[in-house]
Length: 283
Image (cartoon, rainbow, N blue to C red; front, side, top):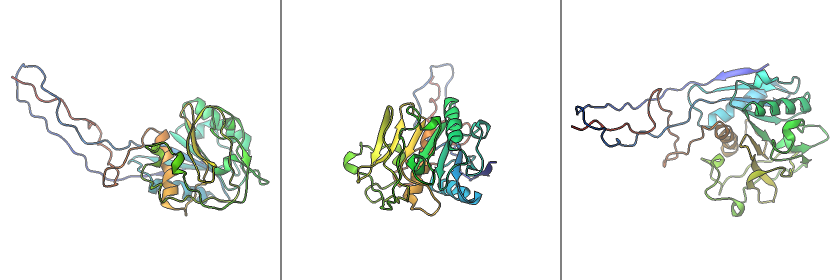
């Protein structure tokens, strides 16, 4: 069963008035550039394998607080420790993010339905324990973990709690949009038990590696599945939570770069143009 949360916000729309000043002459030159568009609404689902439903909700809502989600965006949650979602649970959403603190009720069935969802046009973010082989069987299985879907394969989990730092010397410049609003010079991302160094599989773009040489972030060739070798959570540094929120926004096609002052632009009102209208007709 999914639980839904709808976020609403107020914003002010800028309306440009057009003044007709000609008769039957040709169209005039283009008008000035209009306001920069913000992100549109996004619907995402967080699937967690947790010991309580509220823990999944904490992860989902913490991401919403850190990301630049537009008014009208929705987030649903599903606890897959005891139940397995169906394609109907996934289908209404632009993006599904998956994580586990415990074993999935049926890791193969979850992985298969995620692959079906991707085949139907959906997008998926996979996180740390999906890739970790442990005695607690926390890893994800099924077709989603095969080459062409997940950018990372499975690797042995290890009890390594050292913070992860992105290796700037191996980072393409400018950084991938998933790092929008994150100071990579200062950011340290917490690692948790069951951390692994998963192998890259298939044709992928390796977005980031960590200073210990472990694979950090990657996306598959189709641009539909992003893998982040970190674990989401409610009580994490803001840059970690923002990374997961950015991944959701990026796969949904709604990630916007911040303004020079670091703020994110408000969405445009219905019917507003992202660029200036054509100028008035000339005599």
